[in-house]
Length: 186
Image (cartoon, rainbow, N blue to C red; front, side, top):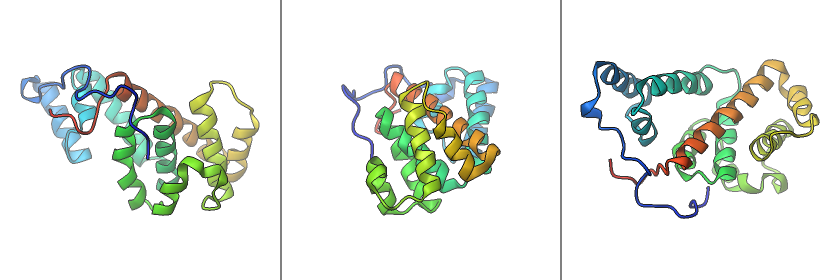
């Protein structure tokens, strides 16, 4: 999926939060994360250095992942494309299995990097991927990209697509800024 980040280290740039040392607020948040996500992933163990930040992050990303109207497969293609473009292997590793569960085919996963040349993506998905590329690579881009997504999906879904792209750019930038790696010992 995404290539190894340049200069990858064996450990994150900061130690992961010691979950046993968290106060009552932090412990309650750990229980909530475990209930909602199944476990405290590396990402959340880093975020738990700041329980208010971790709580807000969990609330926001839960809404993006579970409460929007856009199809799960489309959401996961957005997330994986952002991970590719930003060189965020942790994000890609976490979301590839989710994408498969949401109905993305293994062939689509393999073709995502060269999606423009692939016949595996319909016009609606292609419009979303074009917007994903533009929003991730540039701040300002041709309005026709947003118009195309709106023509396929409507206004609500266009807002949700743009918010998902923005949210997962935030995620990948946080992961890479702190060199969070799925292989890290914690």
